[in-house]
Length: 168
Image (tube, rainbow, N blue to C red):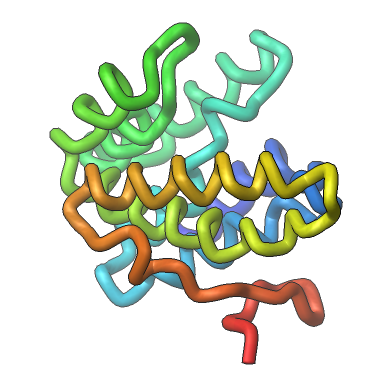
């Protein structure tokens, strides 16, 4: 099950880079690692957590959605759909309340937001500071909304050998 989820994630995110030009798949890997202790279903949802949202164009998004619907059980499908933000959905008024109704999606989102918060410090060029502050504020608020202390989740990361590691 995990291998199938990794293959779908790779097909969507393989060549993508994040805002600082790190491989996007290393983000997906880190989120999956953060929830792996909760069980296989959590890890599968982590591998797929951005797949529907990021799949473009529309035909590819439909294909990815179908692969998820056919390839995984209902609990996983519902969690992936819960963690996928819908177009036009307000993040705090609509998306997070809907996501919180699914316990697997909630735990994966906590891992996702913690990862994103923990690499915000990398946006450290003078022109990036406003974005860094905006993202830190957003992800602390997200984590607080999900029932954890957002500030305590910030553990600065560094990217080494293709993986995100807590900065020493």
